[in-house]
Length: 497
Image (cartoon, rainbow, N blue to C red; front, side, top):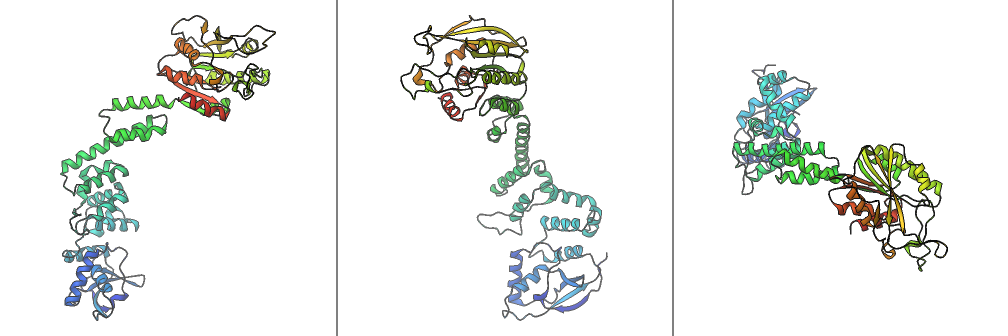
């Protein structure tokens, strides 16, 4: 559309006029300067406001700052009830406004953000890049470059830049305005960054009072881009997001100069993430929370089903007088063990070792329930050095327990050991559960079976002896489960001592 050569000249009350929606931002400092000029010299009739009509409404399209200055002057200060206006018909309002703004450079020169707003306004009207270029008197390529700023830079970052834009921000001791341009954004490297690092780069640049050279800006952008790439890699490779903040802190401290060192740290965290202590039903936890083929070794002391309590302690409230969860009925206890072992077949690797504590009373029932996928290798004897409780008058003192050793696949022992382990039992005054096993016994099993970074699982954790042994052994991972919430908390404390 062409601008009319001879628009109609009329007069309007400035208090009743309003700006066209496409008008650029009104700068307060520009309005203040115009107010001061009007108060001193009156309104210049050679500067008429430009109006257009849309849907029977009149809008100011030329002289927005002048209008706001007139509207800001208090009634009675200066008697201006009407000002000259030019009525434009069938015109291109934005191009008309841009042409007129060239005359207002002294007060409020047009800048990048005015252009971005104009492009966004026209885009929202449904215009194509080519059509927008026609309205602005620009090439399509130039419109595309400016639109890229809107598309690539987050709204928060643009607002931050606008606050410090030359001609908008007052220059004082704490502020040094900068002339942000489309070219600055395009060549700074900021387009390659996500919002978080765009904002950090912008804040750093502002903190420098805009003294960075182009090379310095590009260098800082590359640094943030590297951090971003490393963080994306960590998000993809980490098994447990709980470690993401730790990795991010290391990345942003420039800990990793090469990806190789980052991968090593991710691997360390992934090994840690395999360590789990979970309170709840072992079968449910194994099914829902443990990956298939995650476990290398199972060491566990399941309920025997013999309703064990000690009759040796003279104190009724002693831990050895307490019962064991799920230990009341032999059939129930044995089936629980069978079902748990069946699930563990899927959760263990193709080659794995199983150590299951048992007694001479329950071993015949246990062996019947060992999954066919396991090859029973040994019955290891744990000599407790001192005999335990039982029939104190009518039976020999029982000073041993048995450990069934079975293998899945063809996993070999690290070292061949004798099938008798002699370790003193835990003193009853130090027990968490009445059937607590010594950490030293578990370590003997680990010496025979554990390789670096193996994952050891105890689905019936009880006192936590297995997990404590694994932690003290070093360079192993663990998964421990306990159904009793009180015992679980005590076990955690014991493990972390």
